[in-house]
Length: 633
Image (cartoon, rainbow, N blue to C red):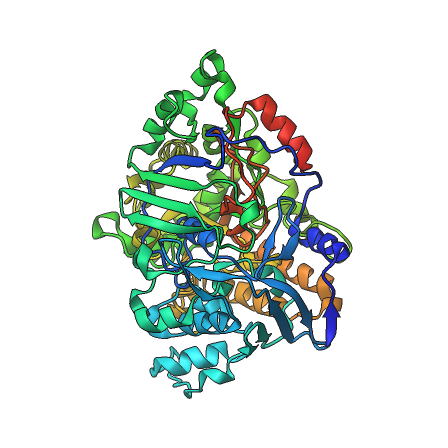
């Protein structure tokens, strides 16, 4: 075996991939409550659909798991990968086998904090078996396909039904899947192929453990309530009352409890959180609030509040882009069949792309420097670098894309003219109804949609498109809108699962026979239905598959170049419209946002309260800038 020594050298190497900054987390402020107790209070407006971290792929549903479940590795405040439940690991010479040595002091507790079991290697095996059991409908199961040896074979064989090609997979025993407990505290993964990003993927929910005895007992009822889960992280979920309250309490039996400073987190549900939280900040009733654009100027100019406003930590782990839905399921009044004709016409998509001025909607949340948050690529700038240290977004395939703003009214008019001629010949009618939905619990999204509607209709004319802005449900928005195809054109987002450009293909790429994929835009429907865009979509899929096939460490540059070519093709043919990265929203917060874990992928680290201390005061912009400088990014 080729030993991977845990050292400062390894951490430094990981920092390159994880985009770590420089600086220190020293100087954290003291608790406002004094003594050993340190409480944190906030409102939330969108309830989770599930607590089951083994089945979810939704960001909002990862907040609780991030804080109550530890992973094999984690990140520090600067993005370095460091040991967590695993104290050391090694990789075989062929790159296919990873062996992790677990710490022997990690414990499971229940929702009262009572110790119930040791955390052992078998817990990771049992969790993966749960994910790969079709009846549990894990949204992330396919992330394991082609990564973990025989994961797809086991899953498909367990379905007992034919796939889209009519093939019935042979059932295999789970012992053939590439995960096993070598002994009580030794875990081994065997990969289907060499996976360059495997270590960084371990911070994601997909590789979280679960107590095997509890899984066997609860089955489909696992994590349906606070008392149907066990916890090994910095906190345990003491109380969960849907649309009322979430209470997390410090887990004193956590192996790293010394670095968990907040002793109690109370999240209170209120559908009007965006409106109420700022007022509750003024009264000292909560420790966090988003400061929306409608009150920002007033807060910054008023003595009472100007020093209460700061910003969130900048992030490169999330990207936003506009999706065209190729499988509309919305009501007949919005003319789904007419939309299907339009969306499969490239000139129509190109007209929409050229008509979208992204500065205007971004300025709703960031009026001072909106251009700083706009991207011409799907993969965020500064997400990762190739073997030569060159940023992925600066590779040759993106040269023209990155240099030129896609917004151009004259170009939009030209594409419109071509689209009208072609679509009229196909029997389409105008204006094309464009259903655009938003989540009312997301700050400023309604205002963004209003701006996009006004601006794009002004450029293209209401004789060509009729953008219909409509509020979706605040709860279970993704499942009821995006995943069900109940929209035509909508801003979507994706968070990186691992430190490799392949992660940014996940919202778009769908393997043959997989009509659901990640349920972003359903572009494979163009192939299945042999529409005008079939060849274009197939070429994109071919490019992605070619890039995925390049796995050797020595071929990292070739791999990155291939993924850049695929993404550039996706953008050039307007199969999506890049939008931007997460805006560092203005907030009122009583902790240093740079103290917590940080990662450019995996979502989980950025949601944790570990290392964070609640302060006596709300952070001012001056303090924020000093904290950012100390963080070093």
